Image 1 (cartoon, one colour):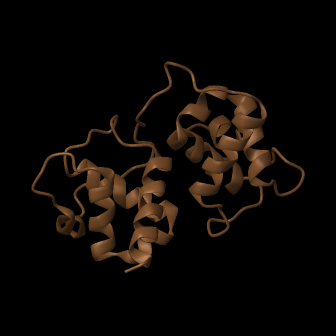
Image 2: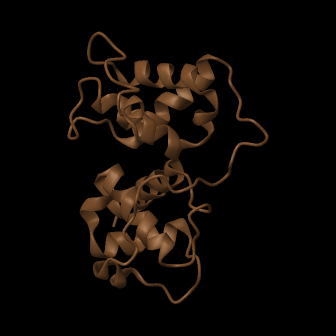
Length: 171
């Protein structure tokens, strides 16, 4: 990335922005991003990190997704017919990580729920950290039949983890 790209989001705000302020800025910058939560979250993190946040202060992806939903609702924005049902990989994922071998399935393209259950079996902590969850999910999915362009949206992964935790809290 050149210097212009490196400084694109520097100091967009006078003070540390709220999640909503960043969502509004991104929505105005490129409205089509709101239909691809992976791309949106990627740019959200870049803006936040260049405008007063550190890595440990970034809001969970669930909060960003909720802010996108509220922005769309408040501004009466509907998803376009051409909006992707799946998302493309944005981050670099190490698919050859030997630790991921414990997450192998005997079926091709396991469901979101099946992957979440497998993650919980080996690493329950990840279910509480959206960023780690989607990163591990992507690695597992890519190693089990998904392509880089067929990954489920972050919102669906996080929602499945929430449902899993809710269902297993009662046990």
